[in-house]
Length: 69
Image 1 (tube, rainbow, N blue to C red):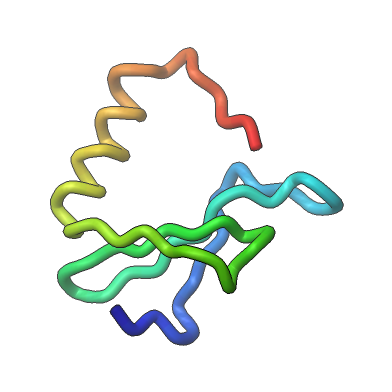
Image 2 (image 1 turned 135 degrees about the vertical axis):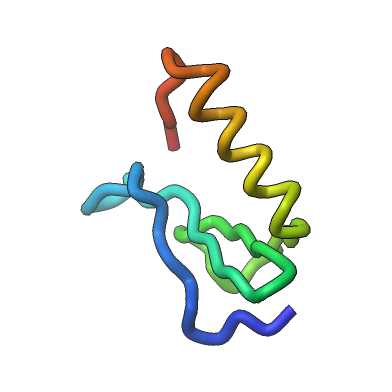
């Protein structure tokens, strides 16, 4: 999966040491996920529909859960 310049940091990521979390990059059929603190290490890739379902489930089924990095 080629994701050259389209990485976006999670809205839960903050500024300063230790506050970076997750970055995602999208292409038409896949979503890639990586740790923003170590962007050159492993990247996970998911079908777009599966990732969308996962994110929507987090929003609707776990409103009390907060992100921790």
